[in-house]
Image (tube, one colour):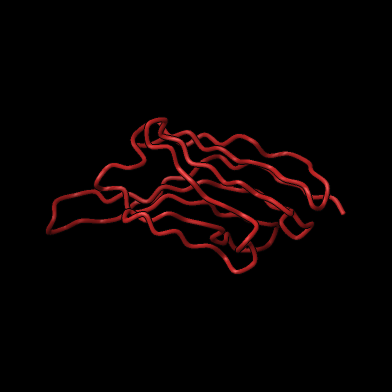
Length: 125
């Protein structure tokens, strides 16, 4: 079991910056951790990937945030971050951190998602 606790959300004006943090109760860089990332969701919409770091260290970003958002992690602190710059009103959403971890024996390995409770980000125009 892994617990994830987010912080750093809030209200900011268009063009401003926020940094989200997600503290994990266990290692975020263990060998069975597939990826860590950030997702966001608006009312009535599906949760969408914002940014992620894979086990191999590769980063991926949604097209809408490329060049503005940066995902990072501090393995010593078991914490991941999302630095959000040049925020736009369309970035308004609840942001969730996510950790994907493999479980089970090699011949029957399965992947499980762990989620934080979500933090509201509101960007005013």
